[in-house]
Structures are given as structure tokens and as C-alpha cells.
Length: 347
Ligand SMILES: [Zn+2]
Ligand SMILES: [Zn+2]
Image (tube, rainbow, N blue to C red):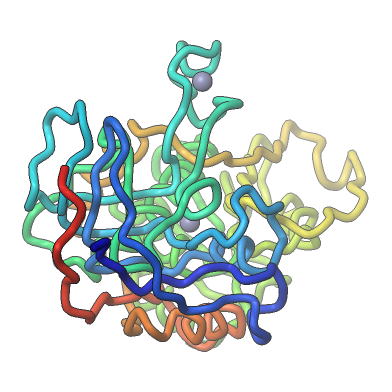
């Protein structure tokens, strides 16, 4: 008899306020060669899950289970797995696999691999009791931090870190963060710990309060102007209209990094006003495993902590609706509060 589990899947991409998601009972997946079967303990709720659910991103796998910030425990291993054992706590993140052979992989830019595949988009993710992950892409996790607090680090944290790297912020630089959700509030903590002055520009009053509590030098409205010119800025809000706003807030030589995977259209830019004096706009595409490992180590050293809002797994749809409506600050995390279903498939 095959064990079954509860899982969310995208029924038909569309507004999350409707019935685009459904909660189903389906077989526990079987780990393939080189893969781990992971019993999900927690899974963070990322804006990308909303993009997958609503169809902002094209369908890669029909009826996919979203979720790519999984903290779980290895329940079984597929053939040819080294270095992981049943019972190990692991993290499952967005980058699921690459070919390892293309020009980008060979030069260390595996985030640009044209054959890359993603958890919760190309393969079923963590809005479920169990998920699978290629062992080579599972993260070892630091001890001493709980599952719920760790989950948002696995995408929101790692992407925020890569975005910060992409700004090439000078030492003790002035950094602007546009939008202040799950990713930004982790990025802010790291930037502050590394000596940056951080200005937050976001619409929510609760998010502005959180920013100041974390040590931001200022917190104002998203289309306002920071109190001083910026050496670097990161656009976390998926609003292309903020690109010229942020560019105009940059000092000479400043860099704007666009962190999101999806952005509404950017209005026309005026060369002199928006780009001259060597200001730059750069995109951020996923991350490498090295980014992930480096960030997890830095987060542990600097005690980067996510502000979390737990939801039971059965309420994933509500968590996504609340994310869309901006009903919480920090990051929502799904908690698998269901009893483990045995027996799991043999490894
Ligand atoms: Zn490649
Ligand atoms: Zn994500």
C-alpha cells in the first residue's frame, strides 16, 4: 500500500483570492537516484509562490506544489546518495538542479544555467507533508535555530544576500531598500551588521516600524526620497514604476539591484536624470549554492533572525492571500502540524 500525504497544488493559475489552489491527498513521492525524501517540518511562504499560483510565471509543471523554503528531516534516501542519512535536518531551497557542464556552471555562475530547475515550479515543493530534493542541492543547516526561524532564510534570506552582493555596496555605504517584506528585513540585518547605513522606503506602517526597530537610519514612503543619496539600492517590491524613483535616489556611481523574479513594466528612463554619472540597474537571478552556504554562515554569525508568522499547513491559501494583501510584516511560515504518515517508501 502506498502512503499518502496532504499537499497543496495549483489547480489553475489565477488570483489567489479565488480557487487557484487546492488541498489534495496524494501519494508520498518516491526519491529518485541521488535524491532525498524529506519530511517537511516548516516551509516559508515566498512571493514567488504567489507568482506561481497566480500565473505571473509560466506553468512549468501542471498542478505543481509550491514552496521552496523547506526545513525538514530526511525520511528516506534514493539510490546513489552520499553524505546524507535518514534523520538529518536539511534545507530545500529554490535552485533544485543545474547541468553542471554549461559555460555558466563551469565559471561558477550556476544561477545562470539555462538548464536550471526550481523547487515549487519545475518540481513539487514544500506546501506538503513530504517533498524530494537532489541531495547535492540540499543545505546542511546550523544548529541552535528553530525550524520556523530558519525557513525564510532559505530563499528570502539567500536572495536578499545575493541582491546585496549585486549592489557592490562600498564599505560603510548608504543602502536603500524599496519594499520591506521577508527578504528585505533579513537583508537589512546583514547590511547593518556589516556596517551599512540603511534607509527603508515602503508603504506599510508596520513594516516601517519593524525597519526602525531593526536599526534602519530612516523609514519612509516608497515613492519618497531618502534623507541622503544612496550608494546602492535594492528593489524588493515587484513594482517597475519604482525603478526610476530608486535610480534618482542614487548618488554618482550608485547601483540599483532588482531582487524580484517578476516585475511590472519599467516606465521609460531619462538618460541624464536616471542613468548618467554611471548609475546602474542590475537584475538578480536566483542564486548559486555558494551564495546559500555563505549566507547561512553569515546569518548564524550575525544572528540574522526572521520575524515569522506561523500558519498550519492546511492554511497555506490564507497565508498567500495575507501576503498579497500585506497583512503581516516579516515572513509567513507554514508549519506541518500533521502526524508523520508511515510507512514511507523504502530508500
Ligand atoms: Zn549549467
Ligand atoms: Zn522564494
